[in-house]
Length: 212
Image (cartoon, rainbow, N blue to C red; front, side, top):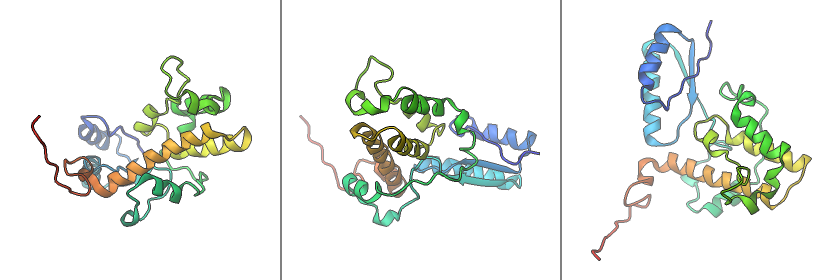
């Protein structure tokens, strides 16, 4: 009996893959990550329609953000205001959702544990993060974060643990600081959708061009 099935929704053939899954595996539930950008939200909507067609429960779980969704109407437009408001909140990691239960066996989690507790290179992150020679100059968490193979909440939680058990310094704070930049743009993407990338921007200010 299949209670939960996972599928890669980044594939170009994801609808065909899901249709095949629903016809062959016949899962009771299909779980995917909550999306923030307009086109990805539209993709999840298509998945939901397919699930309804086959009578399968569809569930979205937020694996991308660190903190619960804020009131988007009150979301600061300036990063510094956002950071000061949110960075003092405590991240709770007691209850793992279905998409994070196997995270500890993933390459992303192995990289996280290596960078923090094995090599302790996070303690020099701020000094070396722009280096291009040593593969441990930077964290290299981005590829895992981008596909949901490692959650930002997990990284934040483990850095908190590192700061308690090993040391807290400018470098450990700086990696969290950069995760907050990511968080800021995630919620802005959800609030402003496609206008975030349009010519006139989120304030819809006309842009005039001049011929050189």
